[in-house]
Image (cartoon, rainbow, N blue to C red; front, side, top):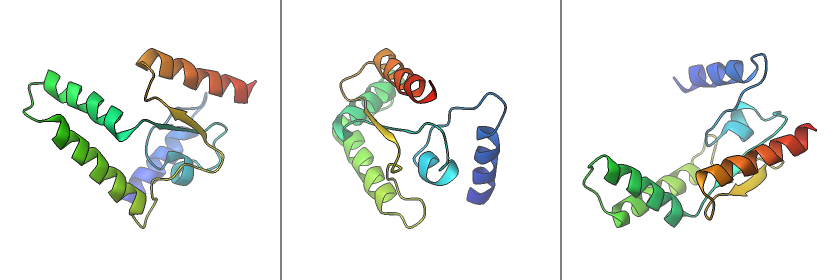
Length: 118
């Protein structure tokens, strides 16, 4: 299953006009030769708050503490896995969105892409 997904993602990335892919191993495993790589992150607390608000909006019964623990567990699992661990590519631009709105994060990403491509 994982191998088929990698093939699909690589094929998708090569389509005419380019593509934007999001994932924890895109810049290191799926598209290591991509023209532009962003490593988008935020603090665990910030990501947990965003996820907690999303879940609360759907009526899910959870707590911030539970969501934070889940975020931290996933990070630890992804950073320490044998295959495609969560690490930024050596040539990726770090984009910390902890203090950014969604619009600000998008603008920052576009600025990086434009700077690299122009």
